[in-house]
Length: 231
Image (cartoon, rainbow, N blue to C red; front, side, top):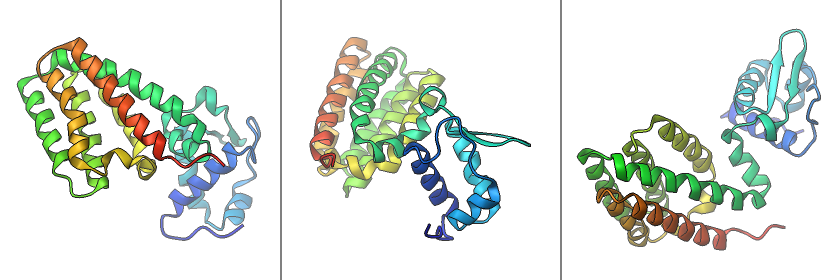
């Protein structure tokens, strides 16, 4: 195998191990090779390997037991949303399920925010729409849009929704370049957010739910159309 470059070695090793596990090179339930062998195989030191294992444990891909070794877990039963970037990159057919979950969760958060948002929350939401509109690149608009959804979750005054939104965004942002199409026109991107922001600011829960579903469906359609066809 080619050695892992020393810059961002942990990140690259994590991705390589994720890919090998998801591709079935290391079967569910099996023990990974000993650390010394794995480190040599990937061209890294054992400290880098241990750091990568910590991340894989957190994501639910492996479990490490002293004196036993590192075992591949059943990630579909035990994994977390941290695996989504790797899964979506390898298996684009998952994207439809990601969009479905995004739409359902977004609607719940929007309705709750409409009922609970403070004056400060409403001001932040409107301000963030303007930041999206003023973005000078697709990436800037996309990041500003992500921040809008963080603010929306905060406006729900439900801390679990905030953490859930953070988790989903942390899964989405690493692969955002694949999903940038709705943000190439910043003014249009802000225009899609505006009805959602205004429904929340008006305190209309059902209207906010409908606006969120419309926003999620519209952006999902644009993203899907721009995705490369599965080979």
